Length: 370
Image 1 (cartoon, helix red, strand yellow):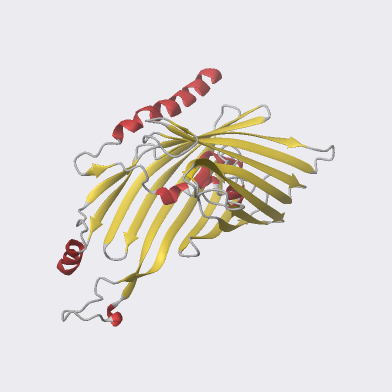
Image 2 (tube, rainbow, N blue to C red):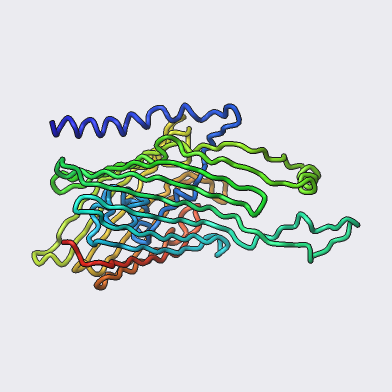
């Protein structure tokens, strides 16, 4: 019975992902663009950034609410709090994350996460010219373009040895000043399974296709500006985010007899079904983005991390086609109930992505359960 149950779990996860690419056509005012809610694909936690996001199977702390909710059951403390800050595009965009997770009982955990990606203080020049045709800089105001996501997570250890499952309910709020806004809702489902020395993980994000319901608030004067500048006037619409399936396998080795030095590694595969993407493996309907991460530890207190991901093809300055990749490095320190992590993404500026410094903190509030 155990074997049949395990097989059924894997089958359901795979079956759910198969038909999603059929939703890529726009119908009845509903669109499924290839890059929708992409701020939710950036990642959270400097540990995971240092490993290039290859943490689907190995994640075991409060950040599991984002990477794989099933991993919340492996957190070492009753309550954990996680915080992160990063800046992108020469500090133009701010990316922030906060989360808390708490044990309900010995087999289940509940978590809440918040993500914000925003560009603040954007000049609004639509009123720059007054009614007399004069330029008046005092008429310039500012606004923010903000993307929020709130994740409610629940995870539980099942009676099947080594199997853990979890799910997220997502609430999304996106605003562009007072001009436009959207509300969105979605669901993630994840699982982790231990087999001998190996750990395996799977998470299906946006299981039923996450939707954003956009509404626009443009006065007649702004509509005239859109028309005069050759821009289409946007209409209220429904935007879908199609499912993606992330798979991972990890293992950890002890390097000395005193168990002071450890080395862990994971490979993760992110599968999308919204036609061809610029990743390592791609077809007309399916693409796969592989990521590799390593983590070395000393006495479970000091950690060094490295990862490779974001493998793409691009043209160099001569116009020749080249393959680029994004190497990441990270370091972590764990002292009593506090963990401090740092990651530098895109070391040496080797990929088409811009590099960023990522800092995160984790607080273990309650007594360890192990």
